[in-house]
Amino acid sequence: MAYYYLVSQLPNISSAESKSNLPLTSEEFREVACRFISEDEKVNVNALSLVPPKELNSTGSAFLDTWYEKERNLRFALAQIRAQKMKKESIQLPAGMTADIISAARTAVGMDSPLSAEQFLYEYRLHLLDDLRPMDNFSIDAVYAYGLKLLLVERMRKFEVENGKTSYHKIYDNILENNGDNK
Image 1: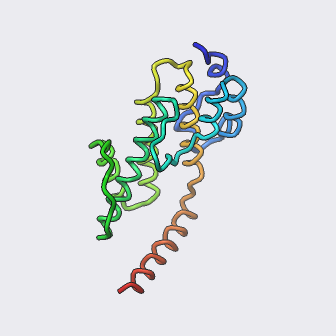
Image 2 (image 1 turned 120 degrees about the vertical axis):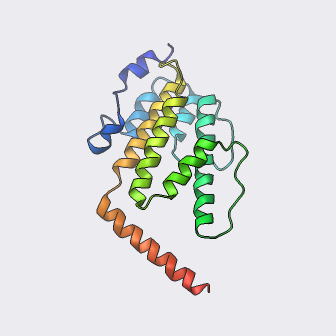
């Protein structure tokens, strides 16, 4: 209950809002949250990211540590599966890898459309975030979960089909050209 006043001020966001205007931005969220939290918690709020740290260092929050570990493992699984698909060497998967993460990565990599893969991973991450979210809706971990969800929704709003296709084809053509030089 320590964060009741903060959490009660945060507007509801849903994954369906990825197509409409969000009630607040991640920057506005940070500004509001930092009015109510300790200095150590401000460090975590200001450091919230969809890109996990390369090294697993404790944030002081079991929720954040678990989120970052799972996101990091997902990224490793995606990298390994993509490398195997291209018949390239890949790194060893971390010890904390679970079957659901590997399955999600395989599903995403197997999709024909990069946008479909991103949408699938978006839904997977939202589901994971809901599974990890603390039972106490008025805890600092609930605040962190809100911030991560907001970052996920903001990220998905940036995808545009036509720009994505153009960019994808440029990158793909560039990869093909570079692989041809290595033969």
